[in-house]
Image (tube, rainbow, N blue to C red; front, side):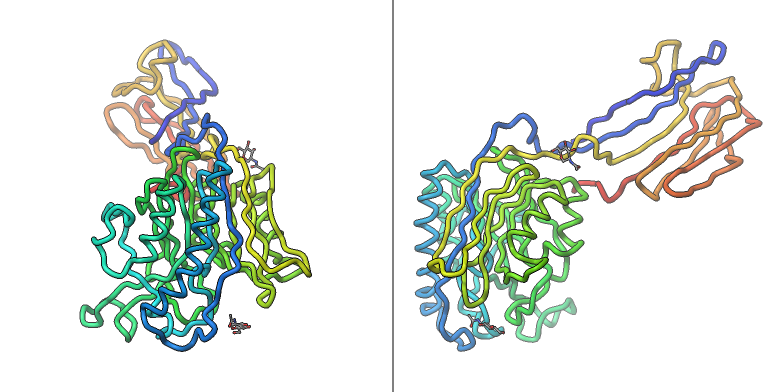
Length: 422
Ligand SMILES: *[C@@H]1O[C@H](CO)[C@@H](O)[C@H](O)[C@H]1NC(C)=O
Ligand SMILES: *[C@@H]1O[C@H](CO)[C@@H](O)[C@H](O)[C@H]1NC(C)=O
């Protein structure tokens, strides 16, 4: 949705012709987050039960026996979170299968996760639609049973063909490190394939970078990123630049002082990007993994295990205010001189075809985009070549004189492409 605002600056009258200089900006307001009351979020730091021999291939039923041990913990924590009023619950990266698999040993753990943009599927209600989707059914039923949004990380597979000429790994399938999101009735609403892998030999990097967000009725839009992604331009900074203000961050983060301790970086990201971050980490002493929390630019509720603490999971619950797009983030920046249709300021901006007044002018504006398009349109759709057009340090100047016909519009039209929302 777009809204346009004429901010208005300077109103000038030249004889009987009135002209007005306008700065026009517009912004996107797709998620109606402003004015929503506070909501309750939860993240679970999980001590994942590991496969003791992650490099040895196993059967699907053996993989499911292993996965169920972790899923049972998820069910129990969802029940605890719901009792505390949580509307969304986030589980960590690798929290179901663990780590250190090979490409072939992870195969039994993987499920095909359909694209929620292409089909609407509630695995808890309709478990038969896709075969071998026990993990998705379980997660969807957790969301539905406890009436909260559930975000979890799992391994997914997409069969591909080497014959079609499009890229496809030699074994004929893509393996993705995947976040899945279920609505409070169990519907699959988002799927995100981790873009920036961190030495994960079992998984592939997606061919196309996706910016994945989903909407909630209680807090508006959330963006999905996974672990190492948080340090990269794509997809993280791109989403921030597009106005996403709330992020979900499943991670399996090894702490590294002095700069990259989990909670330290989680808060730094929230403050630096002025966003909310729901971060769920794994708990493992051996792998130096702990540190989960719920951060807003003005608050931090977190857990970080200390040396000697029992090695166990931890639920973190916090109340937050929804964050929507910043109202002053323009998608468009314009500085223009336009002829008004009448003497009234409200007539400015209406279509005008004729003008008599010729004038010399200088139009100058400071833009936060390099893409600024200058134009001079005079009476009866004739163009004039501006005499001067320069650009330096974000300031664009256009000067013109000795017009051949009356001035309809002189404009510097700036496009902030990077702020466009899809
Ligand atoms: C996984 O491998 C890393 C080294 O690559 C090792 O430090 C770690 O202990 C292993 N983790 C498990 C769970 O086997
Ligand atoms: C952060 O966002 C809030 C609105 O949510 C805004 O009022 C504030 O100015 C922003 N802070 C910075 C440093 O951009």
